[in-house]
Length: 100
Image (tube, rainbow, N blue to C red; front, side, top):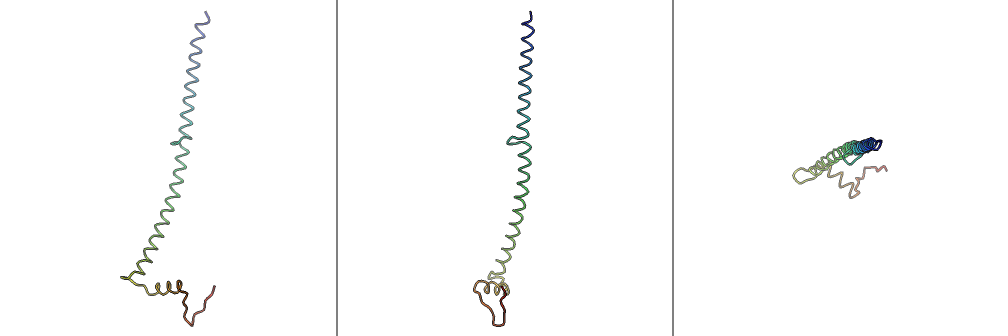
């Protein structure tokens, strides 16, 4: 008579182990999976770095657009043109001293 009582105990034990294993798997996936908490934190940090790089590139682009405008035919900045010519061609006036 003991065999009928031991069978439901084994079945309930196996179901309990399966439920705990399944819960553990989903908990692990929620924390460390591709869409888990750790990945979310990692993506947020990467987003901050990329946003900072984007902002730096926008500043650099604005600076380059300003220099391009100042050297264009419609708006000519003679001081900038003189500076660029001296830098590229290596020209100096007779009364200038070069310090390196």
